[in-house]
Length: 163
Image (cartoon, rainbow, N blue to C red; front, side, top):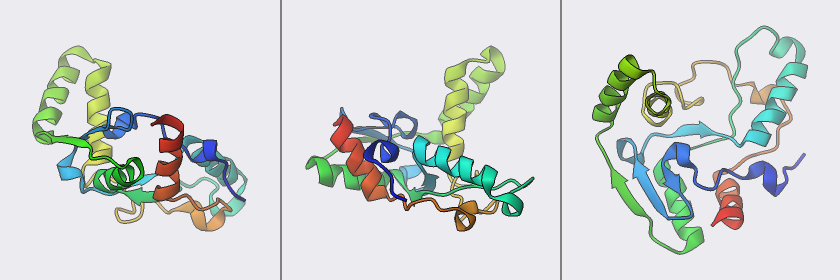
């Protein structure tokens, strides 16, 4: 099985990861070094469908699927090479952002604060967002027939579609 280009493409601004391929700007969490597990929505949907059909291997179990792992820096490196440009990269104090977001959420229950806290869970070490190295649940890929999904292909397809 192979994926079409539309099944491999990320959103144009990869905004959840604070990388914007149209403006060529990125904001790094933890210096952009934390690797996390990535997939695209169509690839994940196919994986979920296969998990539901996988019988005893996945029935009544919490399982993950893993497309590829990459850090913000690795994604930016591929983007810079494919777009033949240098990204405008900034960094910030993640702990300060977390504290501000926690405080705002406690007082206001506002969505932007909640999203920042979810981002922190994905883009910082120790929260289980790298399904390979942090291994909180078994990875179901071995029981499925998902096509390979690679950083290079996904980023290249995103650039073709959105840059």
